[in-house]
Length: 111
Image 1 (cartoon, helix red, strand yellow):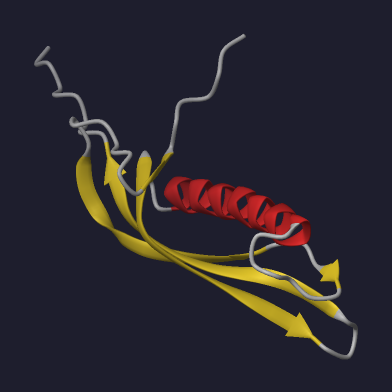
Image 2 (tube, one colour):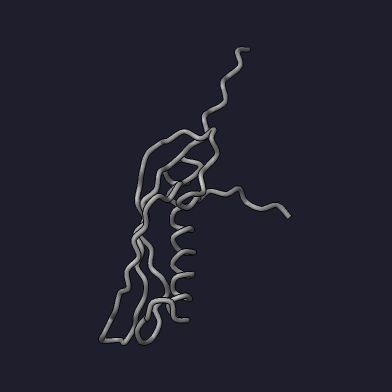
């Protein structure tokens, strides 16, 4: 079984040294909604957090592809609890700032 190459690197986990900085970008993601409220680190919060981080990873991977890069290094994240009191629902919202990296193009060999 072959696994896909790693694209998203979080905080202290760095992309390959061969990669060059291409730019910076930000993505936003949300978790699934749950009934009631979220208390930091209760079961619902943990489930929403895991769901949010999975959505964030997918969104960042999509942006890396869209922007023509190879890797993203997330260096800052902000996570907030959101509420819809009318529906009695809560969810997590995240904003993730990352540096986009690309592998250098191989040098063309003269014919």
